[in-house]
Every structure is written in structure tokens, then in C-alpha cells.
Image (cartoon, rainbow, N blue to C red; front, side, top):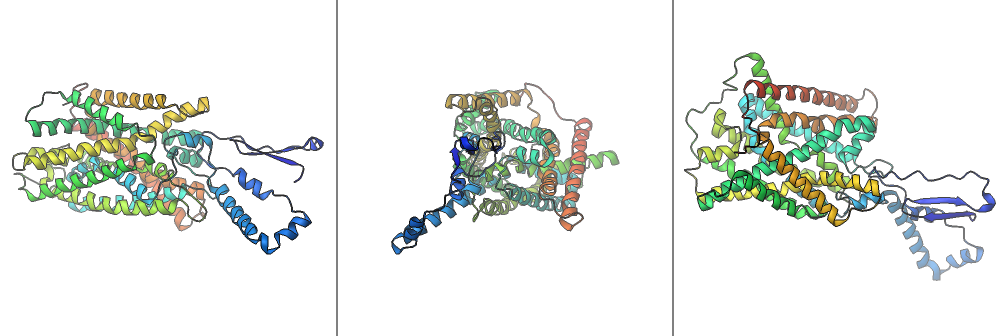
Length: 524
């Protein structure tokens, strides 16, 4: 060891030989994988493990009582370096990107982010699925989907860290590790970016439209057009999006979670407490004219349920904001936060779905519970309650926009930092986020019928939630072939892919046969 020189730089430890040993082939460190949010061995650990042997005098000194505290400190420091070196040495690029820029998350932050991304406007369309499935199958399918997605959440949380200490803080990266670089990108890039970007577009439409309703309730007039309200909402969301990283929006996610729970409870309580509309019916799909149409509307209903359980594309990113060590890996606080969050989510989703279907039956409008409240109870409900509900919806949309846009911001900055190998300057970060807000606004104005495609969106997102995690667990963990866990994951993954194809087919069938009101650049 006396003839080796250890150099420590951003890439990691590089060991070179002295000139007299030049003839011996050197072993170089592997190249830095800038595109992989992983962790390598700490140079401090290499230094600790390569400490030269002590001289006889030093050995005798270290054995004396005077040196005992020093010896204990060295042993303690060496153990700390072994732990830290294995778990917390990150690629430099991770410290430059908004998702992994801060690693001080905890179980509370996990619960806030999971609640904000797991409950929202999508829950208010759940009663629409019951109009096709009926009472028994509606409750059964909703319950099975909840249990299934909880299991795949657990799989993703376990897969976040490999046994070697590598952390996969982005869904796309884990997909590329499991399926291969090309196939992983093909399978995961479009659905995850589509979920993030499409959700932000939908939030602009719902948030801007609800702003218009709120102003009308307060002032009794609407001097601004719908597009102008979209502009106001987009400006507010873009200003709030300047918070630097995922951990910095934990408070925003908490506000989003509180407002989502609040307006969800208000809407279903008002709906069941008021008189039901005349002509209500609970017969599944009374307008179906053929057996094929009946089957495809059921598939579309399953897509609506799958759409309500989106958010899996953010689980790894949320866990990536947490510190990790050998004694306390990040999966422990992450799973605690997720369990708490989904208990609350279940307490919100099931009453909304069951109470909404009981209150309106097959008369519930396509927009879901929010439209039903204004359509059937605008006259017999106090203005302050309607105004409070609208205000809560607006605040929730602004908060949800931040967490769903963060993967897009992270991807944009990843492209920049990969090319120039330095952090993104503040002015470019502001430009990226403003440009994304403008693009989302343009799509919201150009395609105002997107909220009517909830079933199709759910079908596209379904593999991300229910299928891919099962396949990735099998390919990465490699359980014993033909064992129970092997059959379970392959079976659930295959069933998830089949359901995705059927749901997308059913959604397209419903759009073609029943039709939706398509009007470009004419938001209502």
C-alpha cells in the first residue's frame, strides 16, 4: 500500500501506481454514469480501508490508556465512513437536479407528497364508473384496484435501492435497469411524461374554469373569458413553480392534500344530504344498444378507476428525496408515509364513489361530482359553501400542478446538465419552467375536451401503476422460478397489460360510438 497514490475527485477514487511500478497494468475506475441517479463507493471509505499499518512505536502508544479515547474515535469514524461510503456517495449530477437536489425528506414529507398526488380532481369522476359497473361490481373493482396498487407501491419502494447501494430515484431509470435501456425508455418515457404533462394541462383547465365560477359566485358577473382565467391560473402556477426542488414544495403538497380532503368531503356530504334529482336510476348503462357496447363501456369504467389511482410515476422520485443508511434505509420512512397517506385516500375515494353514485345515479354529468354539485344544487346550497368548495379546488389544483410538473422540470434540466456538465443557472431554470407553463396553457386552450378522456388516460397509465412494477420486481430481484411470488408477479403483470389494452380499446369505442364534444381552441 505504500506504493499507491489515492486521488479523490468528483468522479471518485482513482488509484495510480508510482513510476517504479509503471509496468504493472493499472486498474482504472469505471466511468461516471451521469445519466444514472446512482451511488458509488465513497473515496473516504477507500482511504479508511487503505490506512497503512502503524509503526511499532505507534502501536505501543495506541495501546496505552492515554490513547484510548483516540482509538475509540478512530474506530467510530471508520464505522461511520463504511456506512456513509456505501450509501450516500452520489453522482454529482444528482445534486444539480430538482428531484434529488435535497435529501432531507422524511416520512411526513412522503405522506404530504403522496396525498397531494394520490387524491384530487380525478377522484370526483369515480361515480361515473359505477354507472357502467353497478353497485356490486363497482365496489368490488374499486376495492381490488386499491389493494393491487398498494401492492405495486410496496414493490416500487423496495426496488428503489439495490443491494449494492444504487438508488433509482426516477421511474424511467428503474425501467431501463429492468427492461434494458432501449426497451425501458420505450415503455416508460411516454407514459410517465404524458401523465405529468397531461395532468398539468387538465389542472389548468379545471383550476382556471373553477376560478371563473368562484368569481361569478362572489361578484355575480364574469368580465373575463375562460381563456383569460386560464392565463391567470397558469401565471400563478408558474410563479409557484419557481420553488427549487421537490423537498421545498413539501408545504405546498400539505396544503394541496388538506384542500383535496376538504372539498372531497364537502362535495359528497352536500350531495347525500340534499334531495336527489328526479328520474334517478341505478341500472348499469341504460343507453347500451348492444352487448359489445355494454362490454366496452365496462372497460371504459375500469379506465376511470385506474385514472383515480395514478401517481405511481412519482413514488420513486418522492423516495429519492430521503437520506438513506445501512441502519435506516429510505424504504422504512417512505412506506410509513405511504401507508398513512393511503388510509386517508381510501377514506376519501370510497365515500365519493359510493355517495356520489347514490346521490345522482346515472344522471351524474360527465364532469363528475363537481359539475353535479353546480347542476343540481346551485339553487338550494348557500353561496358561501359553493364559493368555499370552488376556492379549495383552485388551491388544490395549484398545489398538485407543482408535484406533477417536477418530473418534467427534472427531465429538462437533466438534458442540459448532461451536455454542459454543470448545474443549471437560475435564469435558465426559470425559463424552463415558464416555457413548460406556456406549453401546458397552449394545449389547454387548443384541446379543451381532454377531461372527457379520463378512461383513455387511465388505460395509458394503467401499466405504470399495475403492470410494470410486477415485471420489474421479477427481473431485478429474480425470485425462484415457479415459486409463489414468481407466479404472483408474472400473473399480475400480464393481467395488467391485458387490462390496459382492453381499457384503451373500450375508451376509444365509447368516444367513437357515444361521442364527445370536440371543439378546438374553444374552451367553455
